[in-house]
Length: 369
Image (cartoon, one colour):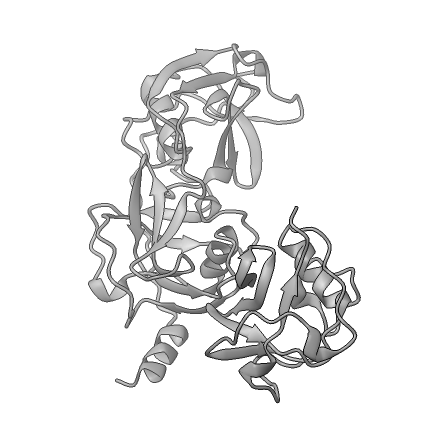
């Protein structure tokens, strides 16, 4: 199949699954995951948190049910319940089930759960049987938890199977290990969160039908990601635990994000002197000297963390040159105001539109810092 057509099908695909499976609650106990009707998320950091503790893996337990934040009563609270909280937050093993150690919750917040009965293997606290405390428990009985603090990689997501960090198969750090993501439900909104988290540009396309990337060798741990697009991290999106569930190979989750803009000076005596090259859309190219100015050079030097630009000679033929580049000529007719934080924010022709040859490649000399 023609690659462009293949990618078009990949981008257009919007395949998802629904599930109505649930585990019956014990008599007198409200249903699991109130208000959702879905299996509990594989991880959903906004749905449980530990507050007022020494670090994010220890503190008073607070949960969000039906859109409300509240606390958990310590009646029946045990280490198996703490184990679920620790796993859901991506912390280490459960250390202690606590009561009254981290202070009471806000008086305006309700006590939402009591007699929580986790087995310790659940993916989220909201999937454990529990009782609605009503007015039985007050905040002087708020439960706490202490987990082993986990050192999460930064960022806890990565793209593998390609030559660049901004494209490949999606892997996410979950439950203390790296895992792949099943492509069921994977869409452009999820990809936007991922690309932003990695410091890359917007997603160019997402794949799960005909990925050209090498497959991830990690086990599939998560699926059915549901990001709103506002999350700071993919780990903050709702997801379902997927380990041990079937995920066809053609549902591998991949994304190609735009490579971030960058610039460099090459063929000179130091990083602050040389022929100017910029990276756009993952490719390095040169800049034409048409309408080049000392103001443009100052923006370049500042962006590189170098000292001020050396003054330009009055005559073009006397400007410094550090050889001719090859390949793309990305920019022409650049006009900076001098206040721009990056050269890409200066006015210029459309990318790769120019009337130049590599004999006109501009070079810049900055003072070394």
